[in-house]
Length: 212
Image 1 (cartoon, rainbow, N blue to C red):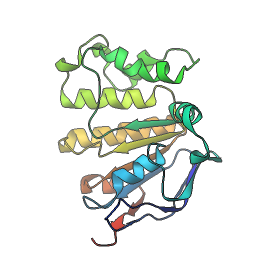
Image 2 (cartoon, helix red, strand yellow):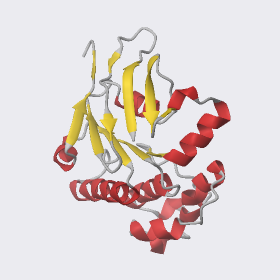
Image 3 (cartoon, rainbow, N blue to C red):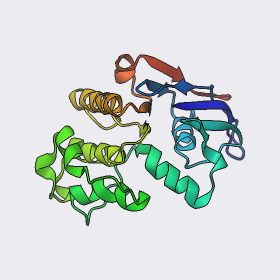
């Protein structure tokens, strides 16, 4: 479902990141570990079509991601990739349901509205019409996850999804991501420095930077 080949990336004046080749099949999960500054978020952004690598190729369901340009890349990303950012980036003026429905709007999805389905799946159906400032941290994270899932993507990327959560909620969030990825037959990639979840994902790699 997702594979990388010879990815290279470096910021100006900073040693290059060491990024191994990966291949993840539909329904599989990969944990990407590494110290702060090792390139975890950079790698996630490259996989998500947000940051073009200096060299190399990302294949998603056989399609070379960065062979697509402009609106074609945006449309492909919106349809096929769901991203759970480290900070939820949910919009205060909108209700929970409106935040979750945003990907339908941006990708011009023709599929039936399934917002209620994911509200129920993630245990926040009672928060459908709530404002964002009334949510707990754990609830806000679930809204972020629901928004990433609502277009039923082939790839789910999660950036430090447990960083600010206690042990109980951290396990709940990882279990939710794994369960939903399995239901969608999506490839799941979680990048984190959180060692608590290392035993929750069978496959893992560790990123390094040459000077770390």
